Amino acid sequence: MRRHETAPPIAIARGRGAWLYDADGRRYLDAISSWWVNLFGHTHPRINRALTEQLERLEHAMLAGFTHEPVVALSEKLSALTGHVLGHCFYASDGASAVEIALKMSAHAWRNAGQADKREFICVAGGYHGETLGALGVTDTALFRAPYESLLRPAHIAASPDARLAGPGESAADVAARALADMEQLLQRHHGRIAAVIVEPLVQCASGMVMHDPGYVGGLRRLCNVYGAHLIADEIAVGCGRSGSFFACEQAGVWPDFLCLSKGISGGYLPLSLVMAREHIYQAFYDDDVRRGFLHSHSYTGNPLACRAALETLAIFEDEAVLDRNRAFARTMTAALQTLAHDPRIAHFRRTGMIWACDAVIADPAAAAGFSRRFAAEAARRELLMRPIGNSLYLMPPYVLDAQDADWLGRRVHDVFDAVMEAT
Image (cartoon, rainbow, N blue to C red; front, side, top):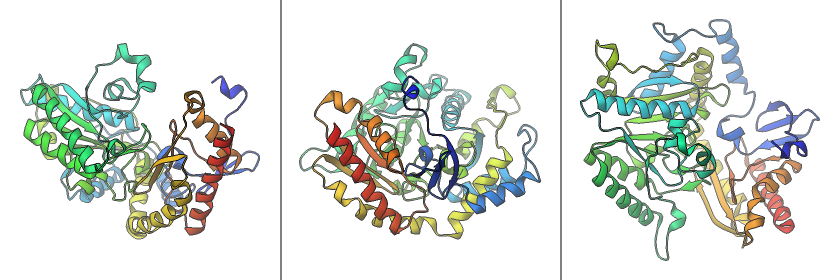
């Protein structure tokens, strides 16, 4: 807040494609998809048309005792993408709310099954799941958590599968195996009280784009089966194609008991989140006694406009072979970043799907503390919207860039990095 007295927020006036334009006409390539939500660029004509058509039909109706075509169609399409393994959808408005729903639903399902002691959770070191109190309870990011520690119900924290922890001769799979061993020890000790394990599959985004081997997610599924715990996959940031597959869990060949979606599901247009659940979770609440029902509601649950934007987003995936196109672009973008990747001031260059990251090597702790702020300011001066996480640089652009954009972006990021490091 205080910094904004000398560095006011940039007033964005309009957007088109991958670019944002401020009130003075300056442009910024949205290299982080406006905090990871925008999939197909700003003011996309297809999504615009779908929303305009929906506005003429229905803007909102409560989803309690009522339903509507957009929410039914969206639920059916998403379920089909999981092969109907996750056949039920519960809607909210934002990612943290989806996490709250999954946590509550897990503990309540165990209670309905006669195991009321199973009301604790395990999360992964460095994980982030939102900033409401329940979500913070399963978050291990001190910046967001520390001020509210006394209000939280803490979770058990398992070792991170961060591939950067690999020792000499070790692979990402070896690090994942060590982390799974630590997780198993926690489950062995506490499984009688553990309701669920929650994980961000493949990439822990808010802790600096921490990436891990897909085998870690498969191992979690196995352990949860053995020790009787639910598996919650927080795909709020990594779902909808970010990881390279539509759902990140697909790369591990498993499905969780709960899958949380938000951010990109509406194409970045409107607030929307949901929790997808397996049939056995649904059946845990199927009862005439209302006290055994899942009593949770949001005023804008399943908003028709947001659902219509999501339906058009899924249609674009189908019609334009988006995942195939992304795979081709990822090779181009990775090649364009090689100069940065091989810079001796950079460590741990990494990629998962449409997410690129690396770490700036800064010896002076004082200089490292202000790196992200300086980088973001220099990037904005050079027509680029980026917000490093600590000393971790990352790119998570919309799925609309071409080879020319990749070349421009690769050169521009390195130019910004040079300027900031020279001034550090």
